[in-house]
Each structure stands twice: as C-alpha cells, then as structure tokens.
Image (cartoon, rainbow, N blue to C red; front, top):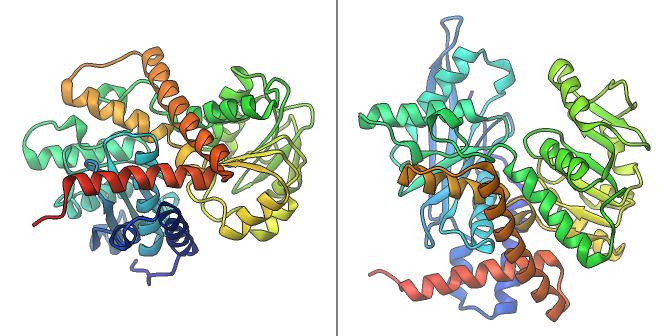
Length: 420
C-alpha cells in the first residue's frame, strides 16, 4: 500500500538542533548545510504476493545522511506511519550517534510502510526479501549495513543477509548486523541498546549523587530496548521498576515489578497490561507516576510540552530515538530534570553492531563478557567527554553531545577535503 509522505516534526527539530550546534562551533556555512541535508535517498515501490494470491504494493525507503566517517549504518523499521521525513531525521540521528561514540560509520535509516502484525510469516519474508532486493544497489559491508529497528528483528536480518548473499553467490556475513549467532551475530547484541541505556543511567547518577540501589524507575516501552534496560537496572544495579507501559496499556506497583516475570506475561498476552503483580493503568498514565528515573523507550515525540509537564522525576534517559520534542526539552530544563540524550544514551546498539561487523569481517568472535566490557568502555569515555563539555560551557547534555558529534564530523570533512 503506497502512503503519501507526511512531514515529521522530528526532522524540523533535528535541523534546529544542528543549526544551534553549528552556530556555537562557528563552523563554515557549507558544513551546516551538509549536515542538514541527506546525501542520497532511495524511494521504492514494490509488489508482494500475499497468501491469498493477491498482489499488494508497498512503499519503502533507504536514506544515507552522511558517510564521511565510514559506511552507512542504520536500522530498518516496519511501521504504518513510516515516511520519508521521519527516515531522513533518523538517519541524521544515526550519523551523530556514531560520531559521538567515535565509531567509523556514517548514518542511514530505512523502512517500509506496513503493519507487520497483519502479515503472515510467509508474507513478512516475501516483503523483506523483495525490499532487500530493491535497495541492494546501496547495500554492502563496505557501503551500507542495515540492522533491526522498530518491528524488525534477527530473523528479518537473516532474510536480508541471505537475499544479499544469494545475489552475490556466497555468504556475506557483515552486510547486516543484529543477526542470530548461528550466522555471524555477536554475543551481547540483542540487549546492547538496553545495556547502554543502563550504563549511561549509572554514569549520570554517579555525577548526580543519586543512589541507583532502590531508585524508582518508570519505563515507557517494553521491547528490544525497554526490557533489557529494565532487567539490567533491576538485576545489576538494584533499581526498583515501579511502572511499565506499552501499546496495550500499563502496569504499576510501588513495591516494584519483577521484570523477568513481566516479560513472561508479555510473551503470552502481548502487553504488560493485566499483569498479576501490579495495577493496570492506561498507557498515557505512565507520565503521571512519580519516580526518580523515567526511561522513554518507545517511539519518537513522546515527551512533548504537555507530557513533560506531567513528569515527576529527577532524570530522563532516552532509550528511544527522538522521544523528546523541543518543547518537551524546554519544559524539562525549566523543571530542573536532567536528560541524557538519545544519541548518547541509546548508542549501545550501534556500538555492538560495530563489534559484530568487525567480527564478521575477520571471522573471529568474542565472548559476551568481552563484548560488554568493550561496550562499557566506549560508553564511559563518550559520556565523560560530553559531561565535561556540558559542565565547562554550562550546556545541557544534548547540546554537548551534538557539539562533540558535529565537531568530529566537521573535522573529518575538512581533512578529507572536497572532491573534485
């Protein structure tokens, strides 16, 4: 089904944030223009044979924002509201995210306009293989390396890799990341984004003198980011997870929810709602639960001016991409709520994707302990740099992270020069 392109507020906000960072750094105008533009955008429309025998036409996108520092890296999402502006904005976020943690990738993003929950496994595979074929002119371990994102997973990445490999005539392990271990995936990749969120929560609370043991945590979203973040914060840092929400509703228990048991409930019921250990609440009520730490780990634009006013916490750690609007940022700052931005807090996924890419290229694999240690070191170094810059110039952590990323990208552009 072909969808008309919609304007994404996230794209406008990305432009504004890039402009402010470029003005602070006093970079040349052309650098700011480059960072506000995407290098290439591929729009595809393709037919898929459904189980009924009918043919349905889907629309998809693959966008490269900037590849000055390395191959394009970014996830593939399947969602009914995917549109080009959103994909552009998310590709920009990926460029900045890779730069702020100093890994040699540029930024990309892709997506298909569809509801994967309405597709059978065969239809989902057909759609994935056809989409992979349509964008294969961009793909390659040295050019463009997709990964899972919203509503995609290791199985989808397996189909991507196999389709690309069939075209090449041999197995190409490093063309995607987020794959199953049996075909070249990395230990620790599945929970890497959530683990990175947990690490950054620990780092910032150390600076805030906020004890993590017993800290009351609210999590919006309980999928690939929210669940591992909640589990690690509970089991490794002693946090109390008092409320969780997803698309089906929310659940709250002031004494704390047992995260693994909640996960088992979700696997059966497809929602956190009606979990026996807590009280079911509307999903929007998650913003009204007083806590120490709030983790938005769902979709974009969740903390806007209105929901930010409702938050009663000391710290927000962004697990999702672009969960806080410009107005939401302003309200949080006025309320004195510290925020750790997405390009820093949720970079754990792309860091371990980098590890997976490297391991696949050399066919030499690390154990999970080594992966997690390397991840923690990179996240720690990146946090220290951003925190020090923020403190020195009296900036927010988001502003500092953008400055670190844009300065690094700008330096790479200058060193390489302009061709021809």
